[in-house]
Every structure is written in C-alpha cells, then in structure tokens.
Image (cartoon, rainbow, N blue to C red; front, top):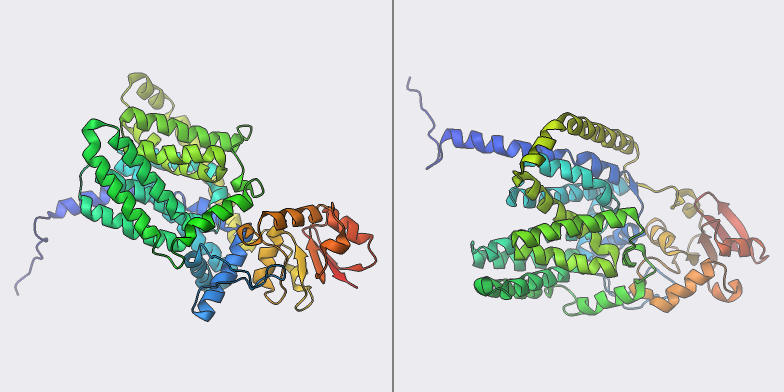
Length: 479
C-alpha cells in the first residue's frame, strides 16, 4: 500500500501556517476578553430608540417597503417621515421575529464585539502588541459601554475604524484603486444602516486637506480626495438620495440640547472629560508621528465633540489603538523599568477587573434583553385600553410603539419628525407647567413618570382616574 503525503499549497510551508496561528491567538484572546462587556451591555435595553426602530423594521418587512409617513402617533399621524436607519431597523426586526427582545440584545452584543474587533485590528495595523491593545480596550470599556446600546450608532463605530484603515492604505500608496472602491462600498452599506455615513466623507476630506498641505504628500492627498468623492457617492446611494443631508440638519436642530447625546461637551463630567483626554492624547501622538490620516480622523470628532458629545465615542475608539501602538513601540529605559517593576501589580489589577466584568456579565445572563425596569413599565403598558390615544414622554413613547402598536402615542424620540416646538410643548406639559385641559386635548390616556408635574396635576383633576401605577410610570385614563 502506498502512502500519499499531502503537499502544502504553492509557496506555503507547513510551519508558516502554524506560526500565523500562533501570532493570531493572542489577538483572538484580546478580542474574547471583551465579551463580558458586550454581554453586560446586552443585559438591559435602556434606549427608547431601540423599541420604535424594531417596530419600524417590522413594518418594513411586512409591507416590503420603507415607511414614508408616520403611523405610530395621533399628533403627527401621516406626516412624512425619513427613516435614516432603515437597514439597521430591519436587522433588529429580524432578530425580534426570531427570539423577541433577548435576540435583539444578542444581535447588538454581536455588533459590539465587531466594534471591539475593528479597534483591535486598527491597533494591530499601528504596530501595537495584542497584550497592550487588549488591556487598553478593557480599561477603556467603562467609557464606551454606555454607548454600545442597541442603536444604529453601532454601525458607525464599526465603519469609522474600517474607513481609517482604508485611508491609511491609500495614503501609503498600497492598492489605491481597490481601496477607493472599498471606501465607496463601505459608504453604501453604512448609509443604509445609518445616515451618519456623511461623517466618513468629512473624515476623508480632513485627511486629504492635511496631506495636500504638505508638499511631499500632495499626490497622496489627491488620492484621498478621490476616496472622499467615493464616500460621498456611496452615501447618496440610499432610498432618500440627497434627502439624508436635510434630515441630518433636522435632527440636529430639533434635538440639540434636549437629548443627552446632542448636548455640548461638559468638562465637569468625569466620563466626558476622560473620553476627551483620551482622544486628545491620541491626537498629539498621531501629529507627532506625522500621520495625516490618523490626525485628520481624530481631529474631526475632537472638534465635533465640543459641540455635541455624540462624537466622544469616536475619540476613544480611534484613540485607544493609537495609544496602544505608541506604548508597544516605546523603548525608553525608565518606562521599561517601571513596567517590569509593576508587572505583578498590573497583572493582578487586570485580573481583578476581568473578574468583576465576568461576574456582572454572569448576572446579566439572567435577564438578557430586559427593558430597564426603572424606565419601562411592562405590566402598566399592557393595561392601556385598546386604541387609546396616549400622551406620554419621549422615552416611554418608543416602548409603547413596540408593545402596543394599537395605541398611538403623542411623542417618542424621533424629534426630527415632531419638530422642536412640539417637543418643547410636550416637555412643558410633562413638567406640569401648562394647562392639562388644553395640553391633553385628544388624548384618552396619559402614561408618565409618577414623579412628573403632570402626574401631580392629574391626581387632582376629576376628569382623570388612575388605571395602573408603579415605580416607573403611572397610567391615567379619561373618565
């Protein structure tokens, strides 16, 4: 009997494959170490957007078409509506059909792991060691975990590091044509998951400007201009075309100062300050390194975060790989001596931190996808009478849209749909600063936090009676 020996493929030695796997293993472990953070975030759904996005995705699937007008409210029913995250909403809806809110939470956890993967991949491209990059990502996770909720911004957090890696290839002269095509394809997928793909156009433009400003790199700058044009062209391949530009302006004007993520940077907030310092440190390192792409990519969210804090996560997601690369390359004797002398402390502290995350994640496994009970009153929403027009807050409105689609709401977190004046009027009514008789005209039910000013008013109003109450909300029904 003749024994056949399988030969390796052309030019690939058997030992090379083993070495490649050995080099990849530490990066895989660094990525898996982030899993408890993703599970912890998936334990509770706290964003009001998540719930109406699921309902919007379900509507898209059932009608085989993107909704063009609002059908969830009684205040702006039939008004034109731009669904700027229709693709992401469909993803959530598919998960919801498969396994309800727990499946939505697991899908979001998978996207959060993709975010971590892109951060580590960028760190690897910048010469970081897997140990340094992995530990920095874990140390930075408290700054990020609040932002890793089930929202279309997850697509943004994945796309930006990918865009930066493509722009660095273009600026370095590596496979430019294919990289520019990849930028366009990335933008097409990005804009149909979330219209924030225009951020990619700005980042590419900033990188091009920095490269063009240097005489030695002007040729590379024009290639980045082409990448920016590809990003813009890809961003326009969406169901609304140029309408995404107008919609972005409407969101900012309606939500500015009202929604937390649309507020200006507050240096008195330790969390915000830490995120900003992380990005600023990385920006200095990128500038000292002379990397125009990294400098431009960080400069855009650094400037944007001063105006609205929704740009702060990008400072951390891009900043951590840059800092990891700088720390991995350092050869200063004093730094190396300090690291060696404290390696036991670092190991113990890191292990303690991982154990804490793992313990919290284990607790979260018992309630994956649970709506935050401090915000969303699941039993009370079930008590809403059929087809009752509900006056409610923006957070509760989205939850009612998902759980009780038969009961139209007065408001949810789609502030661009309602307009700033209507939102402010509802806020004043919720605070009890208006006349409930006029403010609640047309409403048959009121679902508000029990500590709100409006709840206090309705307790004294004989026209309304309490149907159900709890720690998160109280339901009034018109007599």
